[in-house]
Image (cartoon, rainbow, N blue to C red):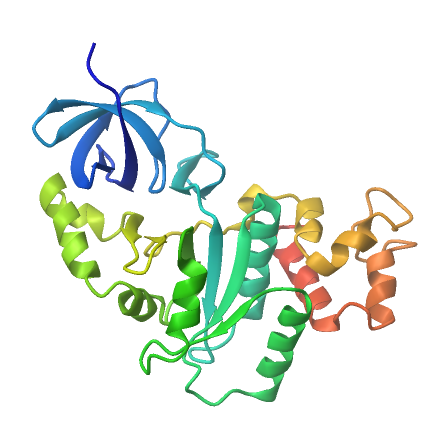
Length: 292
């Protein structure tokens, strides 16, 4: 009987996967019966030739992030994520609607989510500071960093250690420079995966897991849309707003949409100033975006 080894999927490369086994990265094919693997997955595999393996079994996941695939199907991009860091900055501009969308999805997936305000060396407008206060008041951790000036990187490194994390955020907010500040030899590692798999072009677009020098792992997902609203219902969107959660049960009707419904506890809380108006208005916008 061939020995079954346990491996960690570093990247899914379409036709195969880069899997780390005993500190070596090898190219593995999957048995047909095995579900699609993603960066962060733990698998059982057998070695079939030098630097080549076969995935025999996918081990249970505690979380998975998916992106839409052809038709109505989804495809896993990253698995066993412990926490998501939403990166944003004053430049190009702070898209709080997008931030709320990310937060709502993480709340629904039961994944810990934290905020990273990059380019903290730049001047901040008062309205942005007020928004940041609102998030902190809701219990979200906020890291103020500057990848360029190396500000606030240490506390962020501590928060990343011992966990599998992922950065997300609109383009131009400096996710790449932040990733490079945390993983100085990132290019070298990417080239290693490319060399092993002989698929240089894949590795730039595939979600890839990197070990952080000070502990923990970071899955880099370049340009991958994994925080779309497709996977959640209107009720789940409302549940994704932390401050709405205790109020939803107090609404007069079970199917309250929190828009103009009679006896809506959420709207009453907005009017009383217990829920911030800006967050509520963004909730309404996201509902519209979902076609609600």
